[in-house]
Image (cartoon, rainbow, N blue to C red; front, side, top):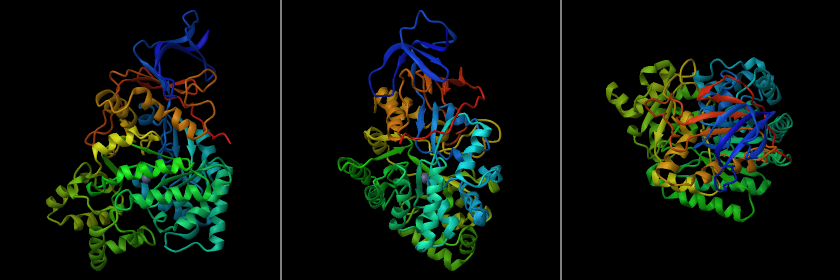
Length: 533
Ligand SMILES: [Zn+2]
């Protein structure tokens, strides 16, 4: 008698190999048998004829480390079949918080994530190890792989200013990274368009990455620009991998706005060449044409020097405003985007702005768009996020097909109702994985189902050296998804994002049902994972 039997399923085993019909048995958290199990009984039997059974999906880029302490059931992730998430991304992790600079670092993180993380129990941890112990003690519904954020480390040692680290500061930062690695971090992340990552020289990043290289760790990067500077930014990430011999992941790959679309295939070519050179450089994306980040990211880098307080002073200063406008028109994140492509996705102090485009909001207020943006950032103390429509659909299809492209949400663990259903966040939070399976596999036939599943399971599991995960095979962890390939789809939209995916009926994490008959069981069988050395 098995714990669970899934009968007559189309097994898509996560290796890329063709689907085949079989039964899967689960016992004690593991896949115990795969084959014709018609003579075996199960305490729990799922009749899965016509349904696919795959390994649980691995989200290569998640900010759920800022939602799990508040909402450990990560509903929006589980409902799309995600059973493991790599967190601590874009240079931002909830630890370490050294005593001396704790308040400043928490202020930086609150400044970035805003109202959404108001309920974070910051006092529960200081180190990465304590943070992970907190998650384990509280319980979580998904498995977690944590990175430590370069931005947080630099902010805690050097504040939010520009400038190079001196020898002492460098040693302190390397110590912090090494400490985080010893306590369970799998590598370092950077966010090189956000302060203080944006103030950090490549040489400093190389030196810091050496502290993860010696532990066989990873370098994950939100690179130094996904528009005008895309090719240099990809080259920088590759250089860091080459000089430190570290495995590199280029996060949420994209090329925007329109006059940079032709850079996408060249950037992929650079990644391909790095692989041919023997470097482990891969990438991930979310399958949408809009990106999303804080509205303040539109401002030039210099406007962020010194932290949010200084940014606010500059926003109030007419001379600084004039210089910002000039710089935003000629370079940086804002160049090339029209204001009717910028949608406000959250603005807790002024919720009336949410779900509306900057062009409309500015027209209604009788202001020029730049002036409206500066005024709104002042009114909300920078607590606003946006979605920006700037990617090419044709590129998206080619990028998804790129052999070493994996999938991510770049999201949080949210809920369709209740406290985590606020604002109008980017639909990727709810729909990234089912959108690949529905839109790009079934509707557009950009990928075969087996290829898409490989990109979500076996490929990232191999990259992350996850022992016994990412493939359906006896002895492997029973992280499993049961879905209907004919109906699986994302339902979240830009207007109405808080909607779970359709067609995903069951999700198991470590052999336990987290989604059962499309309902979250509120079980918390997730664990903190470690790569094999
Ligand atoms: Zn990012």
